[in-house]
Image (cartoon, rainbow, N blue to C red):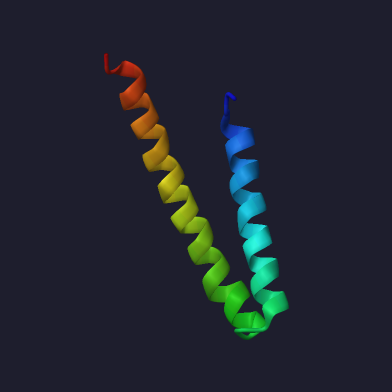
Length: 64
């Protein structure tokens, strides 16, 4: 499977939306806490992991 930017961004966004929905539905935290603190943190962490993963993939593609 080949990922491009829209596919990777869509997968990341889907995971964050799913995680946010589950946290809101479970009721373990206040909805305002989930939306104002947890969801942005999930997005930032996901973007950092995506960038590291892309760089690692580029390194692996160049290495013999």
